[in-house]
Image 1 (cartoon, rainbow, N blue to C red):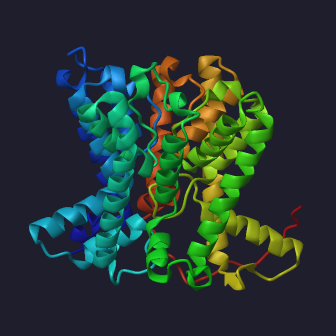
Image 2: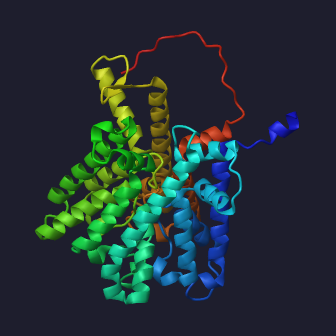
Image 3: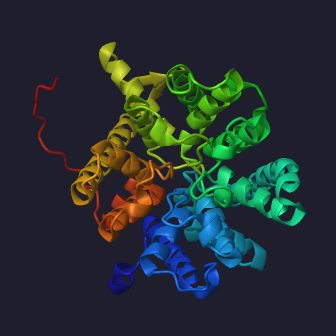
Length: 443
């Protein structure tokens, strides 16, 4: 019995193993000659980077998606995006449902950890809700985008492009097929196109809100006061982190554009920081202060249990609330007339520390290895660890070592820092004994 327990795999370990296997399978498929347009075998490091970026819904690329990968390769990429966006465990439960297999407590518990659900009860029903919402939003997005894409690219290619970009946007992946207009051009050709810009923005926001928020919206419609505490926090801070950067970009970066284009460009660059990874303007044309603002917003990311990455918007809310409570000399953090538990504050601070350490350390290392400007390297590492995918254009020129660093950051960012730590320390146990208290002066 003891030997059996030694080999028990925790929920967090299952999540990590699941994503690792998904990336490995994707890498092997992308190395096949059929996956590239040239018919040549893709180097494993390039395939691994692409598979990690897709499964971790990041968007950083070393090869242009439209011009390098064949139809088969693009199909592998969008499949990895869909699985990675919803989560490996969610897709596993879907397979159980389709085959009629019984879903046990272990699978339900793993699903709870995977999607950040509050409880195990009702997890299968909640999984069905996730799949239904995803299907409705992605299908709606594809239909709307097809209005423009079918007229521009023809019916066959237009439908394919519509579904590809709808899935990529909702899953906050940032992969695009617009390289046919210019390598690595993303959506820059649509900077002044209000319909495409707004549809993609809505898809990104829908994916970043999280399915718990969508459950509240379904249950209570527009009655905000009846939403759960988490949904209120997510919606409030999402609005703040979209509006404030957009206003800043409008007045500082895009003053040379006409009013319509300026408004659309400002809004899109702010929304895509939810960790979507598309861009409609040249990021290098933006000033360093704007890049620093973008790094900060990228690191925050979207909501827990969403398709977005980052350290999560609720983490920022908790840390700000805790800071305000210190300034006001309150005993605990408070928001919306509710008290936030001290353990939640500790978790938030631990997550922030992990993200800052990895983001800064990796940026320093890449800058030293590649002899590139530090701000560009930090932008790239922020984009990787927050699974955003926006780039200043240095990814394709990086050495194998730097690419491996970005691969590790993307993997960390998708599975989550605490998931990795809990998976590593799953064998440790809490003890009821406590050490003596000692005081230390801070600040």
